[in-house]
Length: 176
Image (cartoon, rainbow, N blue to C red; front, side):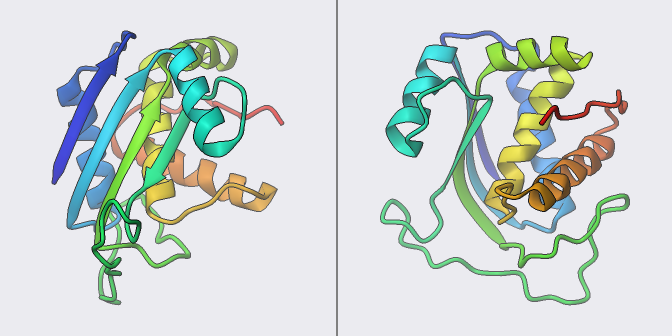
């Protein structure tokens, strides 16, 4: 797996090695065999511009994910895992989607938002950052969070991945 981690005008308590390890474990938990993944930590102004320019949302956000599978940047056709005997890692439920055998994408994370949300929810910032990483990876695996039911499933899947990494559950609840 090719996983790169970059810091742009911000600080994070997680090392690049921590982020790479966590991403590898999360991807392996769902049976992803190959990945080209870039994880970029950005300041609030830069992620706001990214969110506005590409998603039409003019506000600072916590995480933005781009999936390059099937797009002009990467002409490789998405290959799906079809092995029905495959079982996810212990403690991780099979997603109700086809999980790609290979992913190619970028995840942009804003540590400033993680600090704000960690304080709001009583979470360690490192766990909040890992939650954003899990969120981005789950989007790359095909999970959506547009409806309340999808948001619940996303939160459950994030919690499962955080448990897999051994981060203690602090009872983080999203405020609607």
